[in-house]
Image: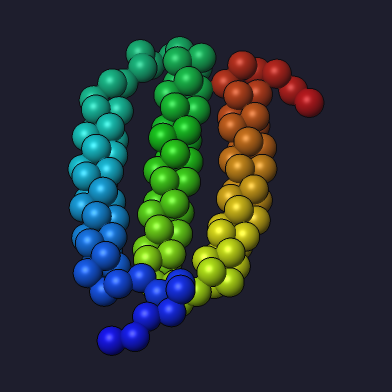
Length: 121
């Protein structure tokens, strides 16, 4: 088997694939526990501030889960990258998408905060 300077040995690639899959599974278990515990805590009826805080917390958890899943998706793609150019293209694509996601998430959290506090623009 001939290898180029950037070729990853099959054994190492398989190990990386398993590691990413195991980390993703562990994260999914953790997020399941977070979501389960979040549904147990109910704010008292008639308290809009606590209800708004719960909504913001749920959004923040959802955004964190989405961002970590995007990182796992990138890791899976990087494991299969053929060369350094593909690695750089994948990284660039990921950063561009994450910047757009963070902007949208920040806007949505800001709107939720305004709603929770009753502040109008």
